[in-house]
Image (cartoon, rainbow, N blue to C red):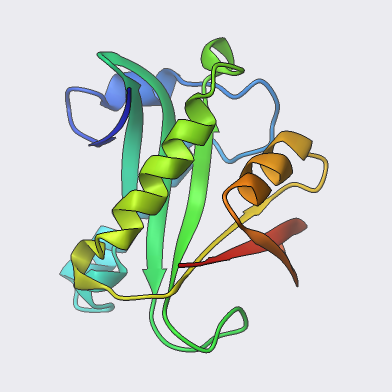
Length: 162
């Protein structure tokens, strides 16, 4: 069974050691730095707490097999007319790919968003992927994500309505 674990001293080193087989996702160290900067902005009163980025270790039992991060955006923007969740990172370590862990992690992330973490309500989940990443495209489509017309940093943007 795949679970999502908050990043802690217990799993930080394992998360930093993870590597994707191809450069299709930002390094986990960069993502954790983004989450830290977001927390600093919250602490300084620059943004509300509900906008916190939420990084997770993806675990199969006691073994950390991947990393994911979600965020919340309030109000209309280029992607939506309402509040949204964004899955900004999802990666499975190269040693653990091809075992269904990415699909299981996506299901866990969708279920988490449906619980309204940080008391944030939204009806959409967005994510994006490098156009050459056919596995991601197929996986997201299997969950009901629909490709939008938007492109973000060269990545195709997809949306799930729930």
